[in-house]
Amino acid sequence: MKKILCDFRFLLFLAAAAFIYIQMRLFATQSQYADRLADAIESEDQCTSQLRTLIDQISLQQGQIVSLEEEKQRLEQECGQLKVLVQELERKGLGRLIDKEQVPVAAVVIMACNRADYLERTVKSVLKYQSSVASKFPLFVSQDGSHPAVKEKALSYDQLTYMQHLDYEPVHTERPGELIAYYKIARHYKWALDGLFYKHNFSRVIILEDDMEIAPDFFDYFESTAALLDKDKSIMAVSSWNDNGQKQFVHDPKVLYRSDFFPGLGWMLARSTWDELSPKWPKAYWDDWLRLKENHKDRQFIRPEVCRTYNFGEHVDWKSMDLNYLMEDKYIKHFADIVKKAKPIRGTDLVLKARNIGGDVRIQYNDQPDFERIARQFGIFEEWKDGVPRTAYKGIVVFRYQITQRIFLVGPGSLVQLGVSDS
Image 1 (tube, helix red, strand yellow):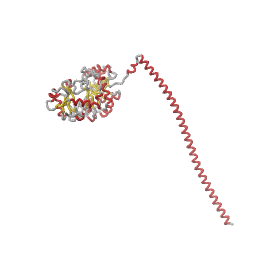
Image 2 (cartoon, one colour):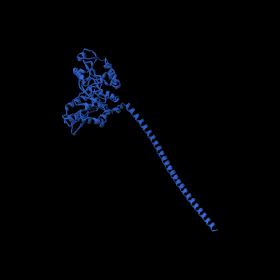
Image 3 (cartoon, one colour):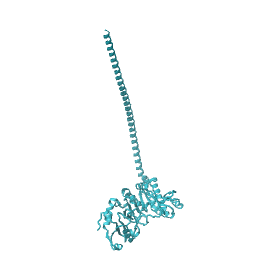
Image 4 (cartoon, helix red, strand yellow):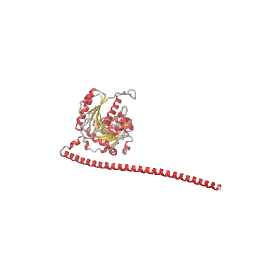
């Protein structure tokens, strides 16, 4: 009996333990479900909050759209009123007031230092033809240094803007015996061009020196060639100068050429090109530096047959002329056709042979010494820079002889570059 009672208590204990274990598991499971339910409720609250925020944003944007539509309608009304006003002004003959402000073709800067009499002569020459186009070609004088007579002379003209470059930094030449003037000139050019392009924000600048006089069609020439400078990126600059421009070597004032040699002396530069040149501008000898292939990168320069920085008294109507033949893709064929028609001459007594031929002639040279020998016979420039003779295009130098006759001095590989047979 005692054993049965003991067994019954043991079974009762086991049943109680099982019951407690089941209750504990149920409690744990209920806690997990409660936590999940709480997380779900919290997520639902966040979604509801985000949804409300999104609805508020949409409502706000709808309000902004309505406001913008109203603003658009208001502006359209104002625009219509302005059009009516402009039409009324034009009807009354006042419409030209609107066009009073125009974008300049180029700033013109005269580079000066210590020659007041030279500056006066140059300024008078420029003003003679610039006054009627002053809005297209604003005039500046940039003085390097503080020479009082130059400053006084520049400030005596109301038609120009005076700039003064004061540079007190010592000059250290790279080679013994060099003139510091070349270093000061390079500094002055960089300072002046930086100011005109970046401070005054011109898109093009024409650079003159204080010992030049200009031709009557100087400004028409640069206005007409400005479009070439913008369209054809193989053109680095436009010059008014021909190194072989002495009267015995020129004839036709309407003829322009491309050249691989930088002429300088009255030239126009675009801002895009200055953006490239300004950061690496040389310490000295800036013009020879521009003639290096590493800097001009096989780009070319437009130059006239007849200089526009001589006052010849001739006036070409450049605006009526088609200058598209100077574009890179057309010029090489244009030039090749001219060279092809020239009669080849060889041997000695070249000047005499050229004189006895009525039309254009071409003369082959073998190398630089050979070119210099031939150039010396005719009296033209002998100088080369970085493998390029002055005024040359594809190694060919052209000049007039006996008034209208053209002489072509042709380099060893020039005809091949032009696609012309040597016959």
